[in-house]
Length: 136
Image (tube, rainbow, N blue to C red; front, side, top):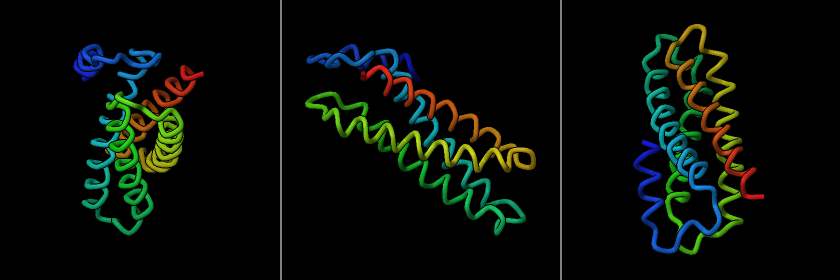
């Protein structure tokens, strides 16, 4: 996915306004992957026999999926980008991924889908942190 994101970023007629292309592409890809992974994890949690024990995990999965999807979409748009909004979204995405990743990690020993989701959340959290750091 990152290759296609990078290819699209390279075609933007106005450039990236000083953003690190590779970090931006990696962050977009991580956000979109995490959104899909969290959505699938929430669905898997709903299928568990003890679904009542998974309510917080399901909620955090849904919240994280929405925040990651929005962040990936906004990061994909470079024309007249608002730096303050970009920073706020990256911070929100890091926060959502940390909360969801921590919750899923608690269930990861019993539910493989939660282990996989926690890993995806950690990758996205790291990608957001790296892009934020490159903003200066």
